[in-house]
Length: 362
Image 1 (tube, rainbow, N blue to C red):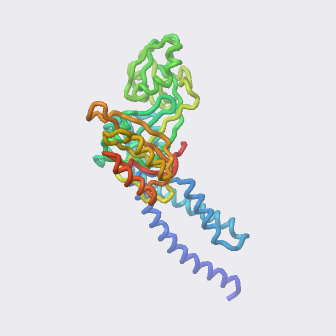
Image 2 (image 1 turned 180 degrees about the vertical axis):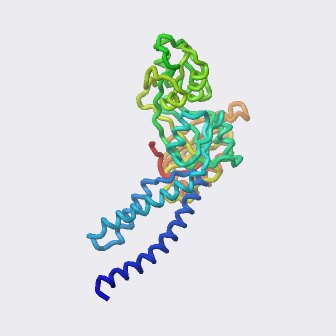
Image 3 (image 1 turned 45 degrees about the horizontal axis):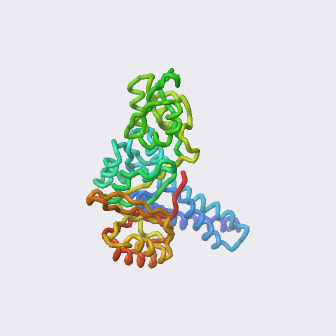
């Protein structure tokens, strides 16, 4: 045999070993996909990919080959993502509203391979996951201009689901009407209360009456079904396209930095990640002087940064409140466990709603 024949034979032998390793690797990739379905996690994780490329490229000592190996690793990860996408095609993601709602847009961006299932309201969408009808639910928790979504916070406090990811989506509100309508014909606008609040200056400027709808896309559908030229919907461009409406004016929300934070809720808490740097928890304090201040001090004294503290009435007792807390730090660490143990002594109810590595802008 010539040197060429020997080299080719060696390559064939190596390829056989790589084929077996490839199958073994993809079996593990399947387990990752199953985990992501259960916990409501995205397929693509940019920080994880960057870590793998940086770490594994150091295994190659030949500098001439290092870049080729990085390309090889990237190709492997791309193939893995394609396989995960295929495995997640049967995933069901609940959202509140109809097609074209901002929650629907969020669902399609976060889980492009899943089936987005619409429900009439937040509670119905939430309960679809509780019952097992859907794998996870995407619900808004806050808008940068119009504040918290109280109904969702209440579901989080009283319900059994966990948050395993928070995603920021830019919200652009548009004035939508039946085709052929002019803006002078519009007397009334219909939309979700949050959207009406986001566009309050525009509405006041034009002297429009307002009607509340359960969802912006529902509002668009109602306008389309009515065929009336004196009403318009405030909703997304996607909703306008979906229901055949004309966009009379774009970007009518008051703030140019109008962003809605969506949380992904699932039945299982993702508490195994060492890289989680953000957490959300809920608690009520005992009815004693200084209890809230002591609880807040415990968080800071254990080295965790308190980003947000919001109160909501429990509805069980008059003037009784629960607190929605967002913080920075790994709550799954030993220090995190110590903090939770200390909080247990000051809180009558304490619930860790979830932890995640970072908030993602879509």
